Length: 125
Image (cartoon, rainbow, N blue to C red; front, side, top):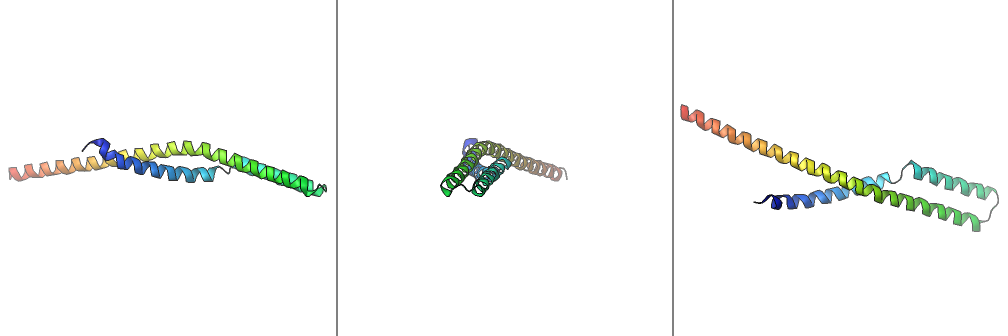
């Protein structure tokens, strides 16, 4: 069996796992401290405008604009982080697969070596 045939299903599985994990990590990381601080600044501006007796016609667009900007910044940051997280996950999962294959090969080599030693012992008896 060719190694490409062996790695093909594993490669697809690695890509699916990496996609899922990178997406989860990016969703969590996009709401960082900068976004939270900006959101509180928008909230403070809205409160100040309300206490200064500005009409809802002015306060509502300011609030909506602030929320849209927060969402866009979070979305953009999530997309940027997704690619780096995806690359990290692909590298990590590939490394784990290679290490697992090395363990299996080592176990098989030890098993063959033990069988040869056992056969030699029986032959000399």
